[in-house]
Image (cartoon, rainbow, N blue to C red; front, side, top):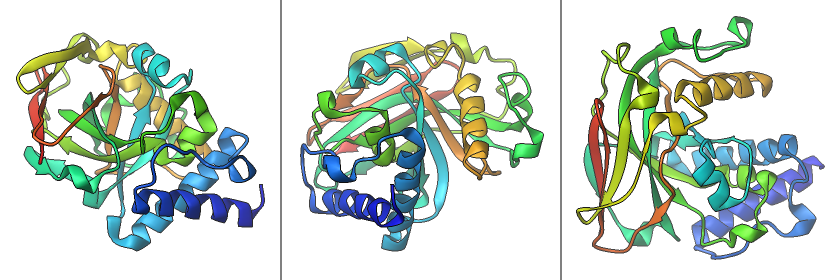
Length: 264
């Protein structure tokens, strides 16, 4: 895929999101054919959002780390997307429904990195990456899929769209997490006081630190790395839910607390 085609794909996605276009992925003539090309489109899209004021990359999401999410989207492999500083929220927040095309939410365990993870320190795995985690927290991922028909989506198209990330809401950081069994921690999503989904940390590839290590290695392979202070969303433990104006959504994770989002 030529540089011009990558630019065209990124510009198409950027303009579609800004215009609120619904339902259509990239046209076939500019759609990336493979994962490597898709990440090149994603990288350029990230630059466009940064230039438009979304802020620097403050962290990453790992998408499709659970069976329920892979089945929902129809893609059987993890992928990543950037989280911009201007889209990171803390505590209990309210956001306008009109700021999104199709706002969805996911309940996750998030981590914050204590130091950089360069390629010469890898490869990383569930065990050796523990020392790089400064803290863990309950989190909400905000997604915006532009109401795309998932039957039209494959891994390259999802990656090109920055894996649908539209921000996150982070709970209070727990720095004394080392004695917690992250895989066994139960979490749940509530909307308007009703439990609408639940799972455990191990739903994310068996343990939340597994997708974290996957991300560190994948970024290294792409010539970059996780950096100190980065926030990483390790994957949803419940299927995505879609919000309407007036909805109040809560993520709770035993041992890590809660956080909430109200859509106005």
